[in-house]
Image (cartoon, rainbow, N blue to C red; front, top):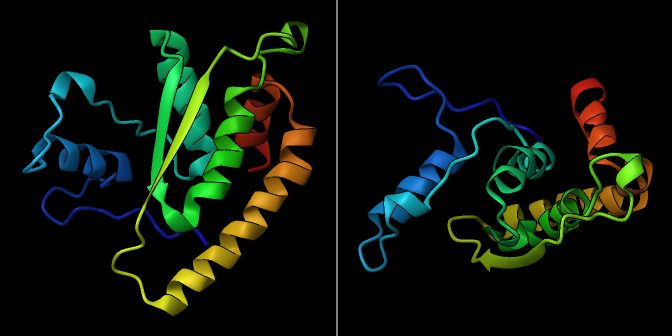
Length: 155
């Protein structure tokens, strides 16, 4: 269930989840992260394109190979399925043995601020999505080029 992009009332621009998360990291009272270590991916509207554009706009360019994906507890398994699929896909079919050499790590955050009914509904939705990624998408779209075609044509 995709929601419309939140538009900030003060300037009419989108508030990206990544920029809000980056601001949180930069301004954290106990453990602020220096700005030079915080990057925000603002191309995507969902988890599949978030993984794709993180890889193609950041990690492949910068040479980052150890990655930590942080998300809600209810979202972690589908996120893991998506990021593992995208980050282990070769760029093209002629590069099938090159998975990029990524080391993927995952950290889930507590589901704070949601009712138990909302969490259960999210978990059910996420499980269906995880199954779709593993049983269909990751088997049908094997390379970054194919994933890009899927994102720009069918998704």
